[in-house]
Length: 275
Length: 329
Image: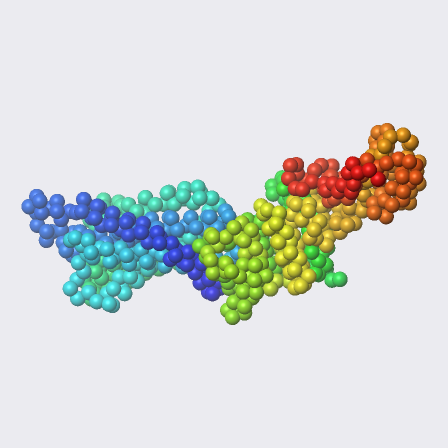
């Protein structure tokens, strides 16, 4: 089961690594978010040009010293979401060209076809996350983590991101396995994309949301992951109360991942069963 | 001979449409068995049931001793499948494509490497094994898929339209590989085809399918013999009616006088009767202006059992073997 999963995701990852253009769109998208959105929507410049105090802003943005520091985890979450919508197409193509049928005649467990997809998509999304993180450092007025930010903090940061990509991958791989055509896949993805993207705190803090939307925004997986990531970026070493907040966010993501995995297994078993 | 694939009243319905209608057959171990029929006859649906991808609506099928519906896992472990679509991964090399399927069939690494190299050699791809499949021609991809389907050493190989879209030379090569696998390695082969020549050249036994049912089955030679043998056409210098003489020649089944000096003779084997016919005509002071004969083909068998041509405008047609043309004897 595990070896089948690894073999199947290896197939896709090999193809992905060999394609020199597979990383370029990710880098471009990350730059567009960071440079265009990060600057045009920068509340800091708006505030300083009207003579306001940046201290207030730092409060609103959970202690981030500039907007891109706040924005970076959100961009990573948004890119994980957009990335998944494209990665899912692979599966639909495998179904259409007969590859899936060939897999179905082999003795591998049907669920390993699903988990192979989950794994490969997590790896790809994590790679995109690392690129985005590095680029966020390099852009002007970019990511400025807390002064004591070290390896342990980096691990904590990427653990949160890994959980988010797992949440999205378990969900979208399930949808793509079940989709019979690219049209039906994109129909479902389009239905999900904007509500998930715009009820999150990826781009602006929870204080910007109206009261009725706050609970939804707080429960959004992108909000959970960027909340956890921001805690680590802004504070470096976490206090006990900060850690419990971080842990709560991670727990929320684990619940999502388990639920979506169960849903994905159900969808995959149904979609891959004997016709 | 022990049977290795059995179908009894095997039926597949998609909604109201019956794709496969109560077919029964029995394939012996080591046999090269062909399902011959036009597109939409139910060939691929039958393969899909036998390879555990499609469910069985009614009836029963066992493969390698296991019921395809009750024990699909045991069937999957013993079969190799080569689909009609070109599915090899373009971005992977030929070798990687084969090794992936070895892995999915849990063949140990060193054994897989050895086996993959052997198979790629068998299908003449050893020189391209390290090249990406996107550089392969259609024929090379088909051969690669043959290796992918065989890497775990299955007892039974299912080949769905193995030479679909291949040119004639490449097709003949494909036949060589399949024959070699069957005779040298003892693999039972179940294949589908809509090429009559392919079924004729390759299969030990053929079932002609049309509209989801088996119309007739037997060895290609048996099926052709049912048509009554060769057809000899002869054109002589005009004059005497030769009907009586020709009917008297040994084994002749039927003589039709097409014109004043033209005859068509039905006879099991032309070569046995030809000397007697030629001598008789010469003795009567006549000369042969033209002589030709046709051997029965699966085309004609197909036409006879289904009432139509398998497909128009494709294939090689009926071989016309002209023995002698406008030559004065």
